[in-house]
Length: 79
Image (spheres, rainbow, N blue to C red):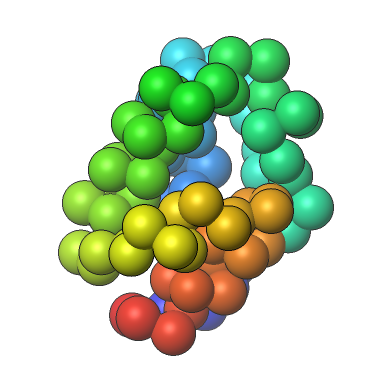
């Protein structure tokens, strides 16, 4: 799977979790860029990503994500 394909799937997930069809994420997207991205939605997002890609993040990874690009980097190593 290419990085572009990962982003296509992530955009679907973000749009579903945040109920906003206009969301388009990139490497530099952070929680500050998405209005409803709080700690609860972060958990929902992580669970949805794990299910979609059939992977598991460890707690350290989840706590250290600075932006979507870092999440994609980890996804790319696991798929």
